[in-house]
Image (cartoon, rainbow over all chains, first blue to last red; front, side, top):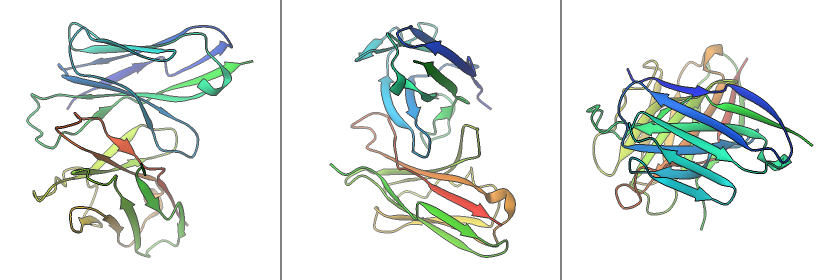
Length: 115
Length: 115
């Protein structure tokens, strides 16, 4: 089956620092999504990417769809305490034949921000 | 507008009992997904509904799990004869494919504890 490797698993940063996390897949994806999950809540969609090479920003967040279509990264600039949470990448492989538009999720990056 | 809602938010049950979890998707969304998230883990796909098509049940872990979607809207996930390993957060998501791409929008989840 499809594999999504998300790294790092966790990170501790100082408030104000920039953050970078990434996902790599074992197969070509044609959609990449980035979610954030706060404790006790469901994942919230941050950024959706649909085209290889696409670079999209949402406030202090920037995500890119890798040109190989097997990776994506998320950057957070000037981190603040409310950035704390778990960030998940998710991808969709149109060629898997699943037919149900299943997303494959990474295991998440747990971000801690030190004030 | 209103997001995805789920009820109950928490459910504690005894081993062997049946439970029903409810999901109200975003109005007009044609696709509905159920996921399971164990403590500190990523999301495990369970089942997918799209319009009037037959559901994709490929992620259901056993025949104790079933789901239905009535009238193309509300969905109920039923777990029969619950086991302790069923304890997890059950997340529901909906999407408006293809008009809004493959982005899925999640509810807050139902935390199930089987004693």
